[in-house]
Every structure is written in C-alpha cells, then in structure tokens.
Length: 375
Image 1 (cartoon, rainbow, N blue to C red):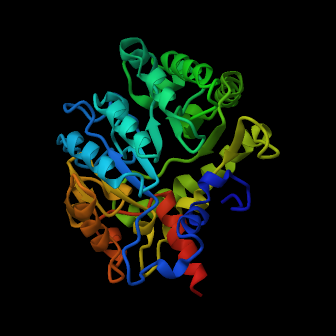
Image 2: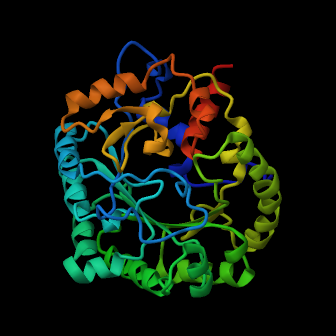
C-alpha cells in the first residue's frame, strides 16, 4: 500500500477541518452540549423515478435499497431555518445524481441566501443540458462568491470508450461531460468560484497510460482546480469479510500498479493548477475500522433519498434502517433533537459493521485520528 505521506489539499484533511469547525476545542466532542456539525449532506431522490442515469460497476450503493421519497420542500424549509448555522450543505449521494432533481437550484439558492457554502457531487452528464434548458450553471455561478463552494465531477475515465464501459451507458456521454465541465470552467472565471474538482476512480478498464494522459491533459486545458485519483471502495452493504478480501485482492496490489502509472503525472507542489494527487487505499482501509466510538456525527448528518435522516452519508439507505434517526424535519429545532441522538457517546460502531455498513473516507479519517489523539 502506498505511503500515506503523499500530500493532498487541505479540503481533504478531514480531521483538521473538524478541529477547525470546533475552534480547536476537542473537548466539545461528547461534551455536555449538542455540537452543530460542519455539514448537512442531502441525498436528493433523483427525478422521483430513478436515482441516477448511470450504472457504474463500482458504485458504492450498487446493492443497496434505493427507495425514493419526495422531501425537497421540507429540505428547503430546513435550510432556511438553519440559517447558516451549519456552514456547509452538500448535495450528492451514495447512489443518486443531484442534477436529475428539479429542486436542486432552489436548494442551492436557499443555501447561499443563508450565507452557507454548498458542495455538489455529480457525474456531470447533465451540466450542459441543464444550462441549455434553464440556465442552471449560470444561475448557480451567480450565487457563488467563495472558493469554499465547490462542484466535484466524478469523471472516472479519460476516453469515451472507457467511460462508456465504466458507467454502463448505452450512449457515449464522455464528450457531453467534458463540454459541460469546460463550459462551467469558462463561466466561473469572472468570480473565480466555485472550486472545480475532478475525481477519478481507477480500475482495469480506465487505467491505461492513454486514459491517464488524456484526462490529465483535459484537466489542464479545462482549468479545473484539482484532479484526484483513487481506487474504488468495495460496494456498501457487503459482508465485512468480503470487503477484507477485496482489500487483499484489489486495493493493495492494484494500488501499487496504478500508482506507477500515474506517478509521472502527479503534481510536485500544491501551488500547481490543477493539483493532481493520489489518495491511497490507506485512507479507506477496512482493518483500521476498529474504534470504540464514532465522531463522524460531529462532522456531518445526512438526509437519504427516502426522506429519513441517517447517522452518516455511507449508511443513508433503507438497507441500514438501524441507522435512521427519524424523518427529515423542516425546522432547526427538530433537527437538533436528531443531532443529539446522533452524538450519543454510547453508540457502538461495531453495530454498523455487523450489518454490512462501514465508514467512508471521511468517517474513517476522523475516527482513526480521534482514536490516535486519545492515546
């Protein structure tokens, strides 16, 4: 496994971000008062009929229940009532595509009205179409005034052929995505925001030198801020022993091989734009998930596509009903009741692992760092 010492941007140093949110006071964790988390993650229910327009083989939520229930009006009221006290509102999902949802702009507009920052995780396939249809990109860019806002596109390929194989699409979508991201990049020049990130999950079908050289060249031409390479998680909802086998058969050996391919293209310093970096499987190592308490609840809380609030973003599915905290509220006071439940010092993370759940990268990094910090 590649050394964890390879540098990556500050926005990926999650425990440091949590400490910053707590103003350096780690005694607030499991203290006497409720801690307002750094972010609220909202998994929108697609267009109400389908959660996503792609069928990625490595989708983390591939085998999870994908119940879709409309709750967008409640979410808009909730964001309004939170009124910026949760500084980041993130739109994404473990199996959902937010650009399918007709309420996305209303939600981002309300987020910015309250002074909060937004994050948008998308496959990018609808960027150009939505701009042509209703000026979505233009309208979002008019709201953004900080590089703390960001849009992250899961590109996962460097050529149309490999993209089609990986995304499980009948038609070629890669060109549309590149056109959409290029349009977004050109239009944001005036304000310099939001930040524009590409993420690239490496697997057998997309890791040729040709693919890597192509996406690096495109990232530089388009003018994105960063390009992150990593290896896909095994899908959520799978027995932990199977995940450990995946680690031994895929993550460890492939990490070494893929790293040698991308090594010549990695940035030498973080001042480079785009900053091209690699996040090793070290940061998603299932064998490191051996902590007694979960502090991810102080970093975030999540509304799933089924309209329920969940302990974390990686368990926001009907598959993990035990991690439901309650129905999505439409006001801040009701949300605080759910926050108190989520910040229970007696909650045992082993409960998650026993039902096929596990931490995502953020959850692992903050929990592992917390464990080390308490020694």
